[in-house]
Figure 1 (cartoon, rainbow, N blue to C red):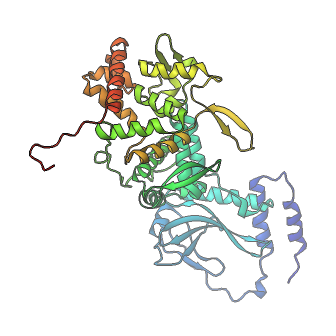
Figure 2 (cartoon, helix red, strand yellow):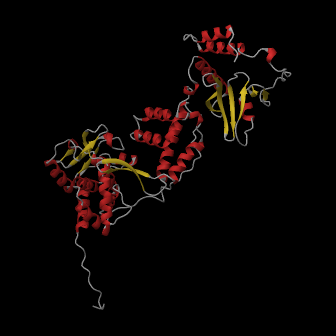
Length: 491
């Protein structure tokens, strides 16, 4: 192996100066490449220099670097993609910059020599469709300067934002105005998986389409179960969760739509991906009545978990969402006035919601209040990661487990806890409550209805809720009908 010349050693020593600017580093690196080049006597006879190639012309072969070309938008777009494998075309202006051609597209990369591993190494800058040649050159020159300062190219990341960082930036901008922004961010990042570490400039429609297709056809719903005193995640149901797939796609489309408006992404790769869930065909109209209601009530009253039984009855008699019922505090309840106030931060409308309580609910709450020792109406002890415990409201895991026991015992399929809310609304409609009363009772107002009935008194709502509770209880507890024999039938 040949030794370095004094000039080369001097340049290497100068490169160790931490105060060098990127431009100075680049100049020293170029000088080192010239100094360490083989002497003319040891080179093979040089071929005549190629004629000047206009921009957009064919790439010319280079003995050391292969094909080279002055990279412009037009020239890059004209490069033919190989049927298989890959092909590199280097830039005449910045020797370390190259376009990597593969059957699926064109990508800007930086190629340099790793002295430690004694081999060529590369770093991806981004897709050619999302990056201009000028931006790629600037990135390449910066990377060369950084590596000349001693940093390992394998650990260098370009200035581009990763998908996860983009989601976080979107969340920071939307969290104050969007109540579900936290949930949407967590869902987006969870299903992105390792794709979240890829640069935004590298992401194309097929990447997100692959995730969407997997969710719609292969993935299964995950729930948390308590097994032997420990919470464990488990997959349930059949393969394919198309509604979840479309919800995730809508979130990612919202993220990229915001990113394009902010100049953080060139395009929205979610456009063109077809949805898989038909909401109209799958609209749920399930509510409890008739024989299923009788079986459900019998199984509910026989369930050993009295706390969950009370929570489910409150959800049925009030028609409110499971999360609101479980997070109910005594400070939110006025038992004398028979009123439950849900704070604005817990409602979809971001507005305080007042709910009249029927006698059935007040009876349950009076009984629980007599033994209350916490701020929560439905308290529970939570196990924490460090092994200690924390007092909080009941989690959704416990009612879910009880619901499976109850519906199995009642021989009812396809009914969810949320269908208790449907049941309350349906019974209100059966008893003749008008739309305004139903909207006010369930707190499920459209903007138009909210504007028209903002000052609706609670008295008719309270009356309707009481009659609804009475009707459900009567229907659920009525004795079985006596079966009379048909006249003329054989004994």
